[in-house]
Image 1 (cartoon, one colour):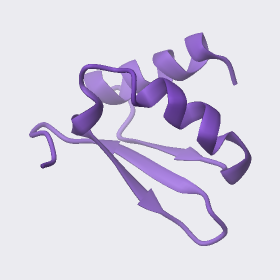
Image 2 (tube, one colour):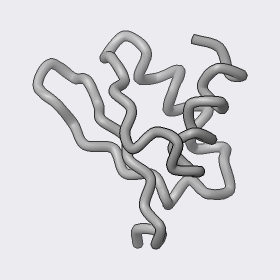
Image 3 (spheres, rainbow, N blue to C red):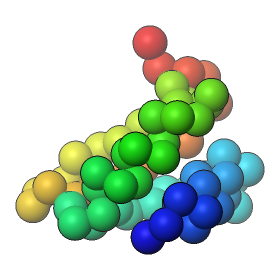
Amino acid sequence: MNEQSINEILDKLMTGETSEYYVKNDDFMEFRQVLVKRPDFKHFRGIGQRGGDVLYEYLKEPRS
């Protein structure tokens, strides 16, 4: 995964083109480094899965 492909995934979540995205444990740190740089970071919710994987969703209202 590179920064460009991660941003494309995050943009699809933001626009609603994709409702959720599953990030494998091996890709988590790289994915998160790109995610936290975004101005809409608080709109993304990561739900931890068994084995260290994370399921991401985009929220219309930012989380607190």
